[in-house]
Length: 231
Image 1 (tube, rainbow, N blue to C red):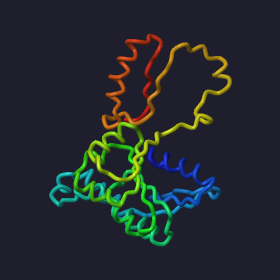
Image 2 (image 1 turned 135 degrees about the vertical axis):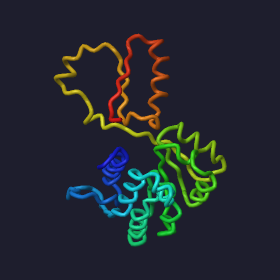
Image 3 (image 1 turned 90 degrees about the horizontal axis):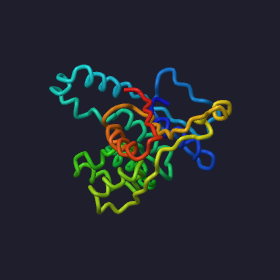
């Protein structure tokens, strides 16, 4: 698990793997070890060429623009092509794709009989070139949004989209993330706490949370906001 998206995918596969045959497709990272007792299969895809391209774009932006490499920043073509070949062999009934909206048509072509679900954890579908997004959406059977806001912005941009649009929020395993019995019994906290856990950056909407919290704090004196995460 390399990041928050990986964490979401991993835990979703754990739950679904209890009753369904699940295969998780992901990048191959050096020194990664896959536990033998997982309730789902794992397919690994090497993406060294994609990684090298990202390094060039990040470390030499002017050269990347001159060579027009920046236009390929979000392609991850080596990774995509490997996943596409896996799908052609595995022939799954449903493909659940996270965020990589530009992959939809190619992954659908790998197995035209499967259903394609696109899950979005961000607003890209309403922010990127409309014609390009619309072309990809022609093969998408359902769009899953991480929040009602993402769903609304998508439907506002594509009101004629004929597929299913559903909101499925990210969750927390409350059996794992909870105070110990000793801390819980000793706690004398009387204030209510709102906890934000995530990367502290503008695209996460933290500024919107702070603005909203100022209104909450004006109405309730016993509430506080705590922020935890890397920059």
